[in-house]
Image 1 (cartoon, helix red, strand yellow):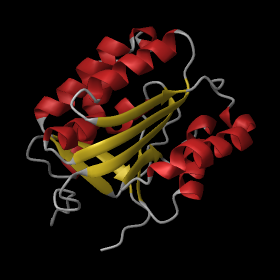
Image 2 (cartoon, rainbow, N blue to C red):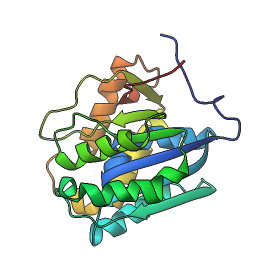
Image 3 (cartoon, helix red, strand yellow):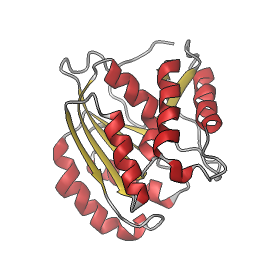
Length: 217
């Protein structure tokens, strides 16, 4: 398998746009990949947006983003308080937010939700991501959950054991409000990364997977 990477895409580092419907989505979907890229010096700037996080969830999201981006010089974090499970009903407002506050960031790489995710909040963020960034490299991450909708990804990021476990440690540390859910535990997150690592023949055993619908070589 011939790997393709971002190490030479832009000498000064990439501009990453990270979009999540809820306060832990970005971390679950691409946290290890983000840690890997920051550690490798591949990230110049980050725009991090969470759309539905209020109260305790907002505080958790902010603390987690601050931890992940501690080593990034240029960063902007926005934690919004749209109502959880109701994002499709606020689509016109969210679309306006994309146009007025996100589009001008001009990212090199966009991380967003999987288009066929069964959670309605996830799907609307994915749809608006593609609607706004039509000529960009977009990677759709996956969120494990009860619906069983992971799909068949076609793009893999091999991640070192260090970053896989750091991602899980951060999830457990920053999102205490979620630990009462039957699926929110280290085995879920490490298990999925282990399966994706198997599929990617990762020498480190772990990987994160994405859906890459358009790539230009």
